Image (cartoon, rainbow, N blue to C red; front, top):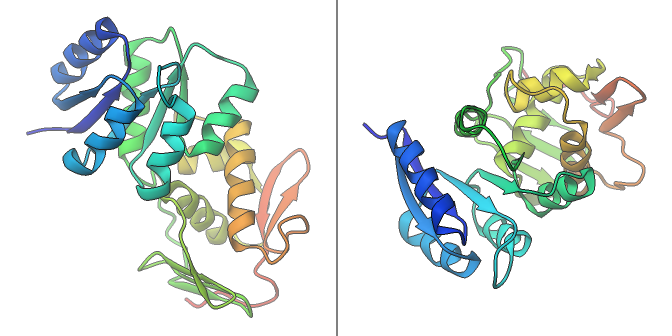
Length: 235
């Protein structure tokens, strides 16, 4: 039985061969693309469960490929890159990546990241309400539907998992490490840039004024807190 279908997008045939051999050895089904254009063609035809995306490719490039993928798909995207600055990581996450792995990397590390990405919502808190409703925000956690000012709003799975965990702890500051491990998995905790990017994306989507948030509040030096705007969640 397949552990999942993975699309490997890399212009280096040697890297693709190594990745294929390793992933197939761990029961994954592997499909390949040599560049971003080919990846965008294969996604709707193959419907992979996860994409491993190299940033340095000819053609449209990794970041643009990531943006195109994310605009029409919720498939988990793990970016692989030799670039290791926070600026590069933020750019990839902002383009829609779920995770960022710096080359060279150990295959065990990559396999752990793949397992985490395929395991949606590693922590599902028991105290998540079924719904939350305020004057301008309605969330149905059972159907994963969100309306902001009366209009349907689309969140990526990671954005939704992040919001769900914050709401489950409404009114309490949630430390960075706890939030990372709850949403990305137990192997995470030292990636604050992930939270900055995803919190910023969430605020743009659900806050009436993202520059002055009333729902997702920053707790300096600690983490983030969800304030329900004075209205209580519906249990």
